[in-house]
Amino acid sequence: PPPPPPPPPPPLFFFTPKTPYPILSGLVGSEMCIRDRNNSIVNVPIPINEPIKEYRNNSPEKESVLKEYKKLRNSKTDVKMWIGGKFIKSSKTASMSPPHDHKHILGKYYLAEKKHVELAIKSALDAKENWSNMRWEERASIFLKAAELVAGPYRDKINAATMLAQSKTIFQAEIDAACELIDFLKFNVYSMQHIYSQQPKSDPGVWNQLGYRPLEGFVYAVTPFNFTAISGNLPGSAAMMGNTVVWKPSDHQIYSAKVVIDVFKEAGLPDGVINAVYGDPEMITNTILKSKHFAGIHFTGSTSVFKGLWKKIGANIENYNSYPRIVGETGGKDFIIAHNSANVDEFVTAVIRGAFEFQGQKCSAASRIYVPKSISKVFYEKLKSEISKIKMGSPEDFKNFMTAVIHENSFDKLAGVIEKVKSDKDAEILIGGGYDKSKGYFIEPTVIKTSNAKYYSMETELFGPLVTIFEYDDKDWNKTLNLVDETSEYALTGAIFCDDRYILSEAVDKLKNCAGNFYINDKCTGAVVGQQPFGGARGSGTNDKAGSYLNLLRWVSPRLIKEVFVPPKDFKYPFMG
Ligand code: NAD
Image (cartoon, rainbow, N blue to C red; front, side, top):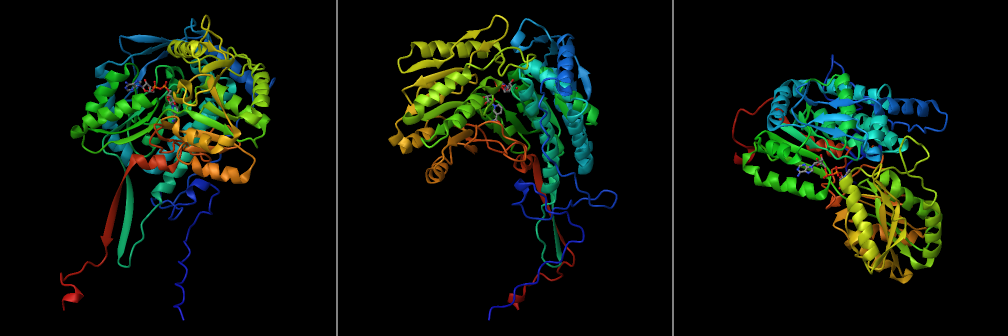
């Protein structure tokens, strides 16, 4: 008979109940913390996603955020660099304006010179020892406090600043600047505890312990304009794991980045842990990448910029003390494909929300659509009628579903694409196509139809409210799946609408490499921290899944300590005798 199974492991003296947080459930190890605070093993609060406020008419939250919006709009803000805990000016400034009202000045920010970047590096290195030696529970407290500050006293301010700086409607500001930032902070703290609790097994007579050291040196965070939450998360997540950071926000988000800085400061983040410098990205980056203490980059932005950064890091590799961590979430050319079994109303809603919310300026925005001929007529009719209901203007007017694109360069590029489509033989403007920059950078929600599946606007990230449709023959379903897979260099998000389960499961498998976040019968935007960890592969990034333990693991360098309790006193092994 087979030997009896081994006895079950002894129960843990203290244990936390299994949490409902699904991302962690596949990991091994105890759910307890391994370090101690006042001779206790603590657990951080279990996070839940921040509830999204609705801002209905006559609601107190609507009144309150509009009051803050008006207050900010009618005052001038001076954004100084934040280095070593001090707010620092320089001799050069640039002004800040809302994209939907570009003649209005919101204030100015100070541009870094080389000496400011060097000071920021020095401040990060000086702060490193104390910060990395601080107990992790203290670091957790600081970021949990930051989350509560955003959820409470800073909520209106961070939302109103995002409406003004990046022209987001209140709903888009709320799901980004308030809810996603709060979720990033709370879920990251929870993942940090979980990472620290992952320990190897120990044979009898031995104790193995894994320590999760921060990286040696400092981390460089470079953030994009389009999400206030990302601006807080990229420097914040690396800092949470015990690193110190030099942070360069986008020129077009500095106004709301200032609120993030105020939150970190009020939460008690010690001086020099995060240092913010603004201005010339080339000069700032070149200065940083020259430092031998450069330990990693946490980047979100366009693919071409990230590739340039990777090359520069490669060219400097001999100079660094360690191999730098390179983490980048970059561009997308995100798709929605409908099968002829799809529900047309659901498909149309996904296209409109996916392509036009925040003016199509989400990395996950739907920008190429595949429609089967058999349902195309109803689809176009419904799409046209729904788009005609979209209102566009200032985010101050809550009836608007869309506002302006981020800056004049973006406006000019998008207007140029519209003109090109008008003159091209294999494409046409089906809906929209208007643009006007007299007051703000407004581009109408625009639908392009092409007969060429590889048309320029099917392949290139345009980052605006332009979506291109390719109509396929129903019998070419499999060929079209191949097209979806092969058409762009990106692999960020994608969605399928299909009510036939056999077809669906086959398609999900076929499309497995062309999106890091894949949606079934849903739009391809709107990932929620803790529920849909976000990131893509191919040209879309290193797929380290922002807001999850996978990302936090990039900011630690584990050290294994093995202790032997009774070491041998004779070098000879039994086999020798
Ligand atoms: P961007 O690439 O223009 O700028 C991103 C950051 O890089 C900014 O801080 C910018 O100042 C800096 N930068 C620009 N040129 C640089 C250079 N030569 N050297 C060093 N830094 C430089 O991107 P953006 O317009 O701010 O944001 C839009 C892009 O970001 C889109 O491509 C979008 O898909 C991508 N994005 C991706 C994700 C994701 O999770 N995959 C999320 C948000 C945005």
